[in-house]
Image (tube, rainbow, N blue to C red; front, side, top):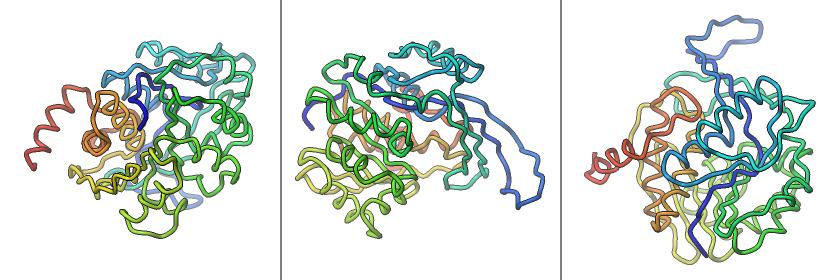
Length: 317
């Protein structure tokens, strides 16, 4: 990798998650009462909160609305000390989604979303912001897929110079991203981090190491591919440095919402500290496993908590 990240810049969506915790999903026509609920910012916020909590400066390059959901987002980012690099957009609120989370399952929640101002991101918005050398620019497959934000994001990625790192999480809609946008992101990406299902949508029904190597082959010669596999840990491919399996930290899952975001942000934070990608992935595995033990979409561990758990992880526990 050409340089370590100096700041995380999330280019795209922060919205509000409304998470409902259930023992099982209702069938059509059934009524269920949730065992609990959480309302908090989600999507790119999960990365921003994790990065700041672990010592990596961060900023949002996205639109925030002026309604009640927008106020939740603005207030939460202000509490973190995370600047919003674009002015508040009037007329329309920030979007939200409703997530149905089955407690205790190591699987992704089901989401229904209602987009808001965040998908109105335009090329002039992106080009009007000056990035700094060492900025790690994060883009999500959700935003690349959307017909509003996707085309300008894909075009703007081509504007970025080698002073910036591009970090991509393909997301569950990767198979539906138009080919031109997907190619624009992959050809510019310095880090691609995906879960197992997303990786197979990109590269076919391969096993972990072969899958990670195949994705690495789609990227720049010095890029890093990460395939996250939950309880199996993850695989990391680094340019010509081969593929390594990074073992997991076993964890009883309570809520997997946002665990991938915690993994990505922790990985970048450790790269910023000078760690090799394999070592950064060890920290990311432990942080994500701690996050799934907690309810909420952005409940990453603090740096002190993570360091304590890393000591146990290295000791084989």
